[in-house]
Image 1 (cartoon, rainbow, N blue to C red):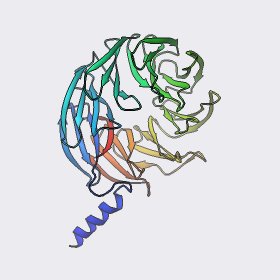
Image 2: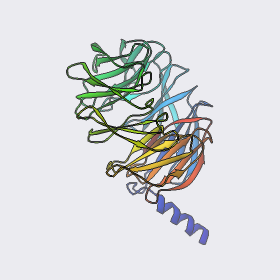
Image 3: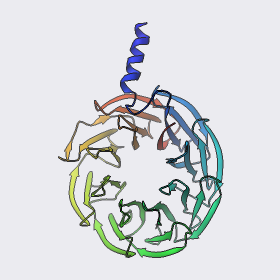
Length: 359
């Protein structure tokens, strides 16, 4: 009886505050090594299912409206759709060679995918699973990102050092903008006025004016950018770099590198709390996650996790931080109230991506 009571108390202690009785919260971890997605019951802290999705799964995203998880098989050349309540893949949609990620329109009606090996971008009707538009872009398109106003799709063309701007409804070409070498990731300001693009080949971030269709600046960094984390109000952009052992902080209004914060060995990826008070940065070399107070730039006590921590996500309400550990093949669950590791949950081989869904 004491053990049961203790287990119940632990479950209630870490149960996210926004999760009503009867709802489930699952984390979906894409395992590049075995072509599966592991569904993890976040409330009970245990794996619920391992679902085959295809070789090299990545780009895992929770659909903003439906109880679905979307992702791509980079080697298979298709998008897969997983029914969250049933735990089954319901669709596989061929999109072209070597897709890496999925993005949704603001209303969730369309999905956009860049096929790196095919030099193309497709738009998928999320209800019918049909491709409704296709466009040729530059060489090796890396990512297709819809703007918050739903008007444009921004595509990074890695081998051309360009960004394609497409009409979101038709995927017709609006403009092509030259940027810094090997553009990869994209974030767009909430008012859809500017896009910030990481340039892997030149250790820069390019700033693109989406209204004038022009390059505003190439901002130099101390090292290769590995992630772009935008503050909710769009005022600051946080850019970790393993080479610089730190984090560049960009002022998005003035298009300047405002500060640099030294973090440790090789900070690589991060996630920001909803209230923008804390930023969590994963360091795969050190095997830890470092919380940073945004207002003061103060580093809090690092949290040791598994081996090679990478992508992280916060649960709704920011009660839990989930981190995939590629080296130890597990998912770290961190209680944010105490900034402490709750447990490590085994998943599949070489976990690389993560999405969280409540249903």
